[in-house]
Length: 410
Image (cartoon, rainbow, N blue to C red; front, side, top):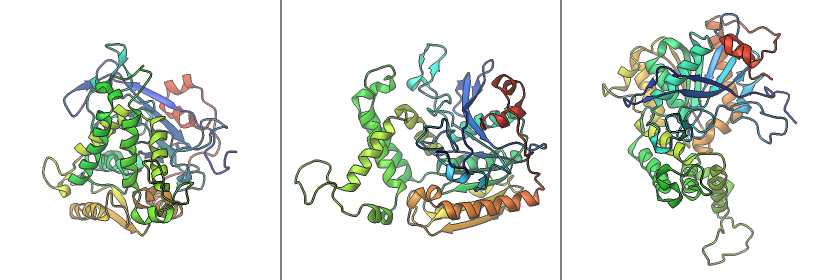
């Protein structure tokens, strides 16, 4: 049964561009055509000034809220924060979420068909960056007829995209909410990324990225990559509370190399389930994009990166138990933004959930985000959207960007 505070049934939408002129990537390569999958929730106001872009983390998708059909067991990945009366209140804001370039949930990525060969790109797909992902999002925002976003919000890799928008496209956004994120990966973070990639490379079924259409895929390697990553999303305290040293369906050690501890079973379950919904090559491309991300370049100064961002308001949030992106990453951002003269609000929230806290501390995040957005809406005099909605078919939506506001509420 769909929660009454949910946005309800939503419809995936797709934008294709760069059909005549390929998209120029930061690497120097080009790509086209490019398709971006997205969903929208709520309605645009008459001024088109109430739009909020949600950007996802490594394994996320455009399906951030609501349900695709009444039988869905789970809603979108941030459903607890998107909907009427929630942190991103769809009675007040027009919320957009898109799958990143290089992803595997409808946006163009390595599993997409290369129009030149008629086969999946595989490793023939060009390497993309966080900057490339944001350029694709700008194409989407332009398509929707939005000159300036009210806010952009996201955690982890989503937070990197938020910072990219603020640093390099500050004229397109009024405020940003980067959560549990960083301006550059440390050597330790790059090392974790590489361990995950090496697990995929070592799987014989990876076949140098050419496994599409085969009866077997590099599931074992991808599962190990996810297991390693998942450990970094937790904290020692949360693992102790959830698992301790409990055995699974055993009263004593079996003295054999089987799954015995609850934590082992948990990691195997998450690793195996991940292989049913994610593409191994996308994992390689997206983690590489995260490793390349570095806002201190080319000047060597993080403050210089935000020199033109003084009109943008920032709500930066970190979590005390996050050891993937410890609080010092956010504090460094705050120092740089303060030096640049930006309007910054910072909170380091006490939590035992580790890196995943930005998804799990729902009550705290709801109060915090709602307060920030409400203040922003008052200061910017943002009008509420009309109460009435009208159905718009796909043909209409293709003709007018404004029609996209109704595309998800179906």
